[in-house]
Image 1 (tube, rainbow, N blue to C red):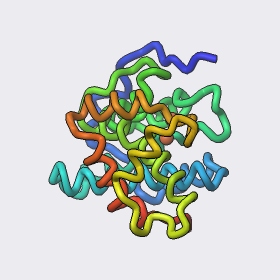
Image 2 (image 1 turned 90 degrees about the vertical axis):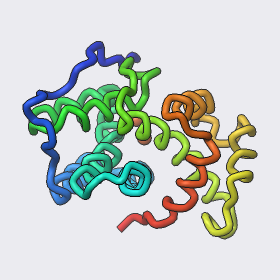
Image 3 (image 1 turned 90 degrees about the horizontal axis):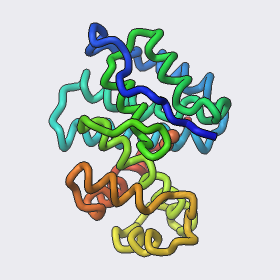
Length: 201
Ligand SMILES: [Fe+2]
Ligand SMILES: [Fe+2]
């Protein structure tokens, strides 16, 4: 099964700056994603994107939300329509006249799967957080105190253990951090510091 999108431009440039309201975006998330584990993953990545936009990029609230929204909806179609991942959510957002940058970030969150290269900082951070966030969450589930006291070196050990969270691509993590120009350690630290804030409501 190929998930290649076979296109490189998304949305209409005239829609620059347009996003869904927070209410609408969460409604879409809850309607499309019935699996709690996947919904938690998307909320986690959304939160990381928002915090990064705020703390590292010093973006204003509107831009922070655009980053957050890309994270929130990046896997929206994975639960019910895995063979249409991420084509279906892209088409939905195009129909709703959403900012092309948000759609491009979603389209490029797995360059090896969708054939779309991450270009902007938003694209690259979504790509970087996606796999790493999942691995760190899996690690928290096997620790007696979850995220409490988690250290970067513990995560790095799990990264080296190929059998741990084996579906998480180590190559993609290294590739993503390289493209952003950050050390994996820094991305890990950032996730350990922010991910515990997120819980399913
Ligand atoms: Fe995905
Ligand atoms: Fe994901």
